[in-house]
Image (cartoon, rainbow, N blue to C red):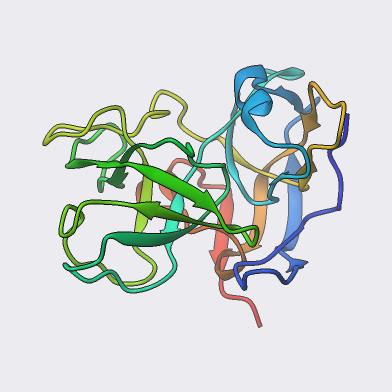
Length: 212
């Protein structure tokens, strides 16, 4: 089991910086990372500090909530998109959605046929040209339950009640991991995967600010 490298991660791909400006409150007891989610992480991967999580009770199950940020401007003719995220995308393909403005909202789910882990916190997904239209760098996506007009975020049932305090590193032989959850503090939002506004609102004790 491993859950360390004390709160370091960066949106500047490959570099690592402190993400927390101040930690004032941590949920008592922490939790054990959802077993299914942890099993899907490759050895050597990291659940970064600052990842939104839902903790059901002290010492209970900790469910990470995953978002992906468009790393480069997407044009209508593009058949690939580069996403920076905090969870491995399915190599054989899946569905993705631009995160709706409201938790529980629907939007256009889009299929991707393959995802390549670039080893720097980004994935390159293969899409049909114009299926995602055009989008600016920084647009936030999530895994979708369906490819269609009424898609939803796959893990929508877990509304976050805090952010992960430390990086969780999966090492060879690890089958489970624990994590601490911050519910009162300040974080450098430009050093973590973007958190959509509706999800920020679900964590009123967390203040999001720019780094220096």
